[in-house]
Amino acid sequence: MTRSRRIGLVLTPLAVLAGVVATAATAAAPTAITGAATKLTKVSASLSGTVNPKGEDTSYSFQYGPDANYGSQTPPVDAGAGTTHTHATADLAGLQPGTTYHFRVVATNASGTTPGQDKTFTTRSEPLVYHLRVSATSVIYGSAVVVSGQLGGQNSAGRQLVLQSRTFPFKAAWANTGDPVTASPTGSYAFRVASVAASTEYRVAPADSTAGPSRGVTVSVAPLVTTRVSTAHPLRGKSVRFSGTMRPASSGARFAIQKRSGTGWVTVAGGVVHGASGGVSTYAKTIRVSRGGQYRVFVRIANGSLSPGFGRTKHIRPRGH
Image 1: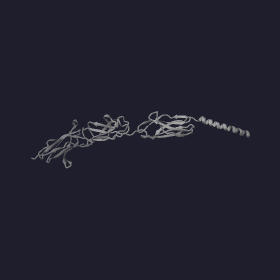
Image 2: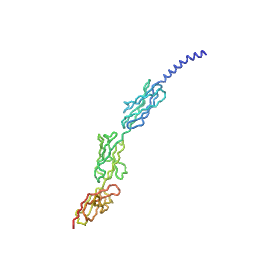
Image 3: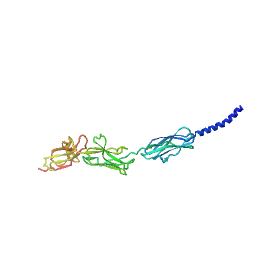
Image 4: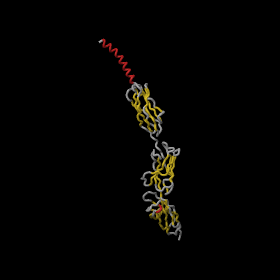
């Protein structure tokens, strides 16, 4: 019994020493694995990764910046002194919209510093704001319009834009109209359409298609109506012939001869326009005039492709017998 106890007393310090040596042998520089960037917004992101302290007191941080030189770093976080993987996280704020950032996790203990692999993320872009307007929402056939606005949002200054259009009934695919324009340093832009021949919807979009288009604005087109009268001074109770043309041609469209009454107009006669030669339709109608007044010819297109139009007002002043 005495010999056995004496041997035990000798072995116990040796076992303790062996444990210390084993612990020292397993301690090492930490490992670091860069994870993903999540919860991306225009100005923030959440970074993740894993760290193994390898048995020594270890801290970690995230390096980030516009390139692989980083330039910014989150405050150190204690990862403990364990020997298993520990989840690492950091939340970033104050970032720039639509910008690509490099990042990595870096772990440090007394045995060394270990960086994780480089990864990237891109913050969400600030959407473009177009503030679109047109010089007129209703024009006569063949008139010019200007589509303009003030571009705001991410990379708006100097952005190249295209004007897109589609005509009534506004179901066809959008098509580019004219040449691209470049927004000014303040974001302003303008497109001039030399001649509008049909009711048309317009919108503006980036030339490189990297962002969505603007909302659409519609310009309604009324036919160009010319009016002639056989005489402006007929004998009272005699006839006056109204005739003229309509552009664009629309054979079968209805026209009305109207007379001013108070603040409105009253139809006194009507008919149908004819022909489409050379893009022009014609009309003619004879009416008996007993009283003088203001007259006009009013045209309506049944299918809605053009808004109603009218010719110049004519002053008819009958003469006595």
